[in-house]
Length: 120
Image (tube, rainbow, N blue to C red; front, side, top):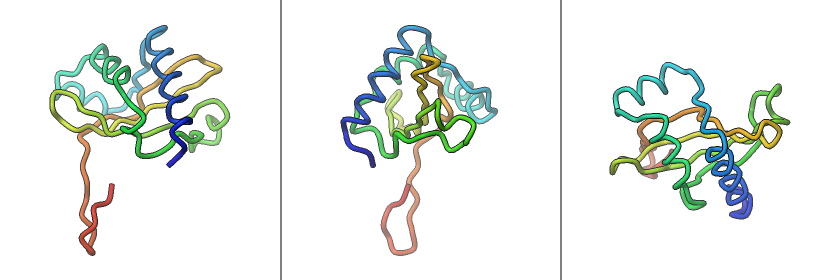
């Protein structure tokens, strides 16, 4: 996990870009299915991003794994709560594009390993 200052900066940028221009929802079937099944609107998603805190982050921020985007976009993963449900939220920000995009949103699940410890 990155230092809290890195997470705070990432979230500050994400909030600024969401307030300025909204969130880009990457057109993936899994995102569309989840949002439709949950009755989550794009405005709900924006509100969720605006309420994220550094302690909600469990991975990142780090450069996008896609080499063509690595220099432009940073990615972080969060455990967020919406309507009393834990959600997995993966978002990305770009200072060049001044945008925030949602790469994934779905129910947050933990998995049990064979030794009994919880893994994400």
